[in-house]
Picture (cartoon, rainbow, N blue to C red):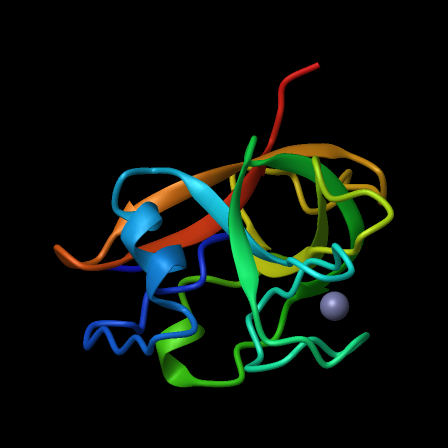
Length: 146
Ligand SMILES: [Zn+2]
């Protein structure tokens, strides 16, 4: 099913690995978690096998509030694939996550339930989850009403 402003879920065949499994397990519970390096405190999202700052391997999974601010975004008006005909125009952006300031965790996501003509950098947003299977929920963000 497609609707204007919403990029369709294409993750119908969930595939997780050891590095990302805690993220997807939390997703089905509607919780946002992110791995933080136990050595230097840098968030690693999405999780690489080693820290890109200090090359340490171990992480601790931190629960985040699921809110943040629009760091950057674009509005897609031209459907690059037939499956997107009903979705355009939609906003895709980089979200700077609350609880990670100074340690850099940002997520790229579809920003839904917004007016793409008035969306602005710095707008406050919150995560919304769409359950696509028993093992995975897909994330999007929507503006927090002022
Ligand atoms: Zn590190």
